[in-house]
Image (cartoon, rainbow over the protein chains, first blue to last red):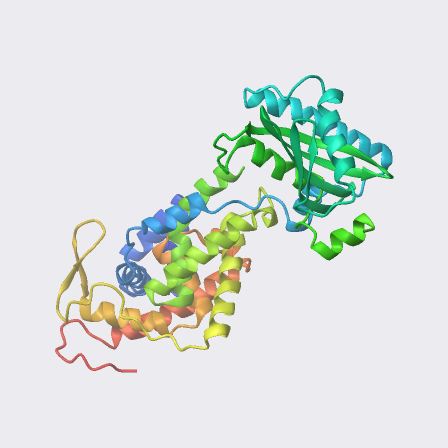
Length: 235
Length: 178
């Protein structure tokens, strides 16, 4: 007589899955039918038993912290790489890129509250002359340049070709510049003032960060080894 | 979008923990699994399609992570008795503060019965009975048909009912029957 009520129906009732109307009808039948009541009680009891056997525990703080602090990977690794390392630019693009980096020079100078000197062409004169003077010298070598000293800090294989990081240490201030070889010429790709001569220069200096960023932007990896550099310079 | 997802993740933490418990059983191992899953999910957030179920996506990550872990360690998981086994005869307090009809002895028996269930039945049982998820939600989260949710739940309950009947409340014989 009660077999037309399936176990599925009784289980759904115990789990609160039925509509209010169906639930009310079924509960009325259960109240009038001990056998149905016994079957339903079995489902209700197992639900309660499981709840009690697996009580909710407070969520460990470490889990919340993990969720709040793990950096989110919003882009697949391959695409992320493409964003950082541009495709190998052709000559016109290389110039445009170099120009945009030059803009960064003046902005960078502005942000650090220090003038990087006059307009870009004049700024370029010192480092470019330094790069020409250093063209046949390995990393670590230095040459005098006016009242300053120019020194090669490293050579890099980049999207702009061979580029070198050059330090210009004058009596007034210190500059860092990235210059890239274009045929027999050296083009200024980036320059920034890193400090006053003899002054304290913390590693997290804005200028230092800007250099790293500039190197990343042109796709520079680790500095060349001595042998690689000698080959690239045709020494 | 990542802040909204983090908030959602915190919201579904209870069901992530329940699912982890259905896989790992030992509570500390389960929480390690939840932790790894959250880290992986966040680091690979680009793999999540907005508008789809976050719990479903994270359950998949969790199951794969668990399979990897188990493969790497090749260990046997001891059947944990779970929290609060102070001894036979003690009475638990229910969530609404009332004393429950289930003696601790029986609860230990229920835990053992839950631990012995096949994993697919255990996960459905915990998500429905502990997390209070709707059948349809569980079907969506586990990516199985609604009918499968109900049949697994029915079989899991039948096994539990046998365990409960095998350990009558008033009896003074805590011998486990199988």
